[in-house]
Length: 301
Image 1 (cartoon, one colour):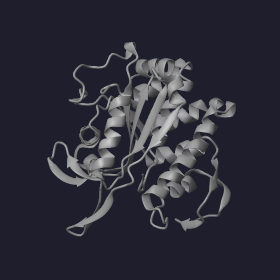
Image 2: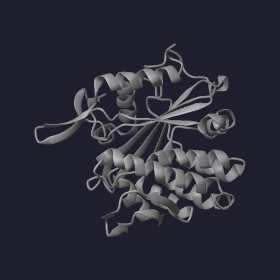
Image 3: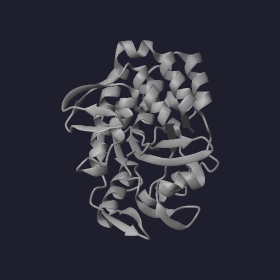
Image 4: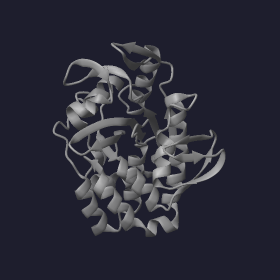
């Protein structure tokens, strides 16, 4: 989900890009050092002991798309949880609706989950998502709007099949196959008000663009553009992953990343409180998703 909205599953693609070309050692290592930002509170209360990546445990990632502006921390308008299990070689992905009404950990107040970034940065988002999903978050990755635009432009645009004709931000999107450059792609994935399916329709367009970018990144020609891709990542992506961790994950989890299952939270309802619209999750659906993720992380039998 995204609002000057970012498709932050794209931050995951930056990681995949970095993994795929990490053998260009010096350039990648320098870029990852630029991207690296250790968390102030790295330990999760949802893990009894720290993870040992050398033992190939199941891992979890929080991907954030943020709308940062000058003198304003902004909002985390895209929040995606990824769990990966190297034993059964599967990955699960779920987007958290940006307007989800939940407890902001650290403030102990109820509010929209995307406000957690404005109040407490990545640390508060991480703690809030952990509490909501009842799982530990091992790694965080955030990307800002310019990073998304830069990535699409770096791969020379993407070709997608559009199933809804609409106009937004002076761009017109016809039904059928269309080619998108960076700013066009951003407007394409962030539109929701003219979509009959709202945020859920936007999620579908995000998946379409995701697949298109992923296919470009896998192509031989895109690999040759690694310096441009890494420049975009270095300027716009922040993560608590180290270079050594990226190398280890690429080696041991590469196959699992190729088998993705998309989960969703769609059975909730809208609610207006004090003139503000919130999305209230369905408790039974949330419990089902929590159990799936806990089991995938081998926290539950």
